[in-house]
Length: 118
Image 1 (cartoon, helix red, strand yellow):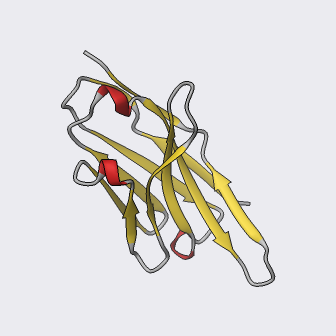
Image 2 (spheres, rainbow, N blue to C red):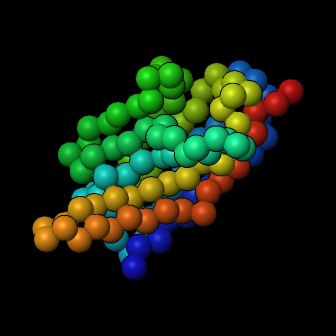
């Protein structure tokens, strides 16, 4: 059974930076599609960025240039720069894999709060 644990959230002023980490255990993270999602109060959860097993990344259009996803073995990072109040949300780590035969493995972390405020 896979487990994902996020860390690195906190309170930061507008224009500041944070680096989130997601440590995966119980799975071979490199063969999963992994991603960062966020959910602001009263809003739906949205994709921030993702990385495929081959290392290709994808970003929400509105976040390109400010957020950078990277991965090293079983740890995934999200470097967030020039943070804005609208980036305030709970950030979740996800690992997804669709296996032969239609079996799906879909794991979520518990989330880490990011608050951008002066």
